[in-house]
Length: 280
Image: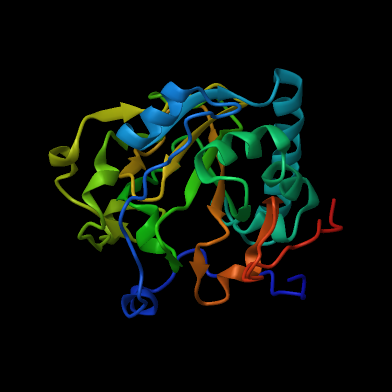
């Protein structure tokens, strides 16, 4: 499927949009005894804990080039009235983001968890400026996405170093095994970048800080509880989230039109296969 598709999608769907969709929101364990890039222990960890982290995919010169590109892109978006969180579905518009989504080193890690036929469908910069006061409340990605079954994963690429001081992402280890969780609408006083909050998350597992050096990635399940505090430091914390799914995942609300086949093919032709944008 390669028909033209719109380049604007809602980054956060209204919950009434999702409430009546028939979705399987249960964890589907990875079965891959012979991974090619990840170790068998990392695959086992992903099944057990819901994430793996600290995988180097870009060298220091490469991530420096990506950071310089993002700096220019952010300045452009802000000049047009956006902010540091508004660069979403970026692979549909910007060729250099499309290049990251399709990067063979990232895709190889993803394939070890999702299989040979994989689509990349999401890309969103989460850039916490120094002292911006915004947090990301505890949530599950799957509750925001019109996808079924729940097999999607997020790759979090550190554009800047991410650590506790500048509000790195945090995981609740093993929480993906509890299925879909109850959330409430976020209170404006929370200054949440998104719009859902899951409470009392300590009951689901141990907190793990996703500290990454620039150029490293983590990968996590769409059912894993995660979030991040506000950045109270004097250092920026920018990450690019890349979303992938096996092609047997069904997307409602035209989200299949975001697709780029990053490996294999889509026998049913459900997902679009977007070509590289000409911009930049």
